[in-house]
Image (cartoon, rainbow, N blue to C red):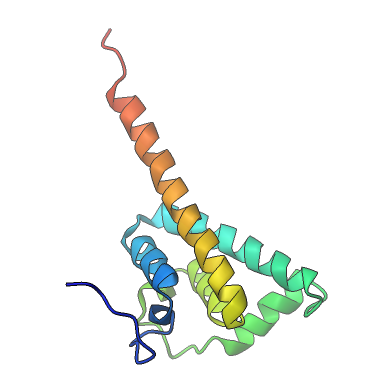
Length: 130
């Protein structure tokens, strides 16, 4: 059955099929991959915000995000790690047009990291016997 995306999505990121897919893959990734993607997301989003002159510094962006974070929400899969939580919150609070562009970059980033890890695993498996 084909998954349908509607405006009645249960989660904020399910409204965008690319973002929804990237988030699902990220959720199923190991902790190290999640942190790598989160750090890259923070970098991309802060660079975008600084270039749009919406904020003057990275500290302003992080401060604005911390103001939005609700301490009562800790049941989501990305709330378990502070870095991941900050990255996803930054993404959630981007304008829709920015989020759409970042979602494509995020999806590519998740796939690239997973491929690199699989390549390393393959090399380790193919090591010649001595």
